[in-house]
Image (cartoon, rainbow, N blue to C red; front, side):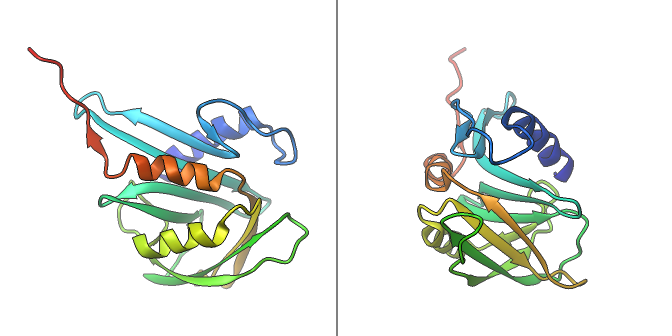
Length: 181
């Protein structure tokens, strides 16, 4: 899954540009700076909509994802090359911009064992609380505590509410009607 997320992130980043300070992307595949994937499986007819945002740093590669899991919209944080315990506290602090002081809150995440939905996963209730806390913030600081210590990154997150609404609208994943024979 990380390879798939990385490939999609590279496509999204290449269309955005290396710096998040450049113009915001436009098109139906974006909500603010969130890249939205809207796919229909050719075999099952299932339509899946999920959104992601990635951070590429000197040391860290982090992905935030909003996706439908077990019929509920769910918030994920995936940190490449970090080992996490089965449960982990993640601090999320929305801010007006990268230079502002965030309003931080701690949330409990669990380590996903599903290779398709890798990373740290918040419960559905916690996911809704995170999105509510982010509100209209344009920037968010995320701090996780892997077994090797503390890791922090910052994201531009404009469009979070719209991206979340698109995921919620298509959750649970619905099978498309099959054409008559």
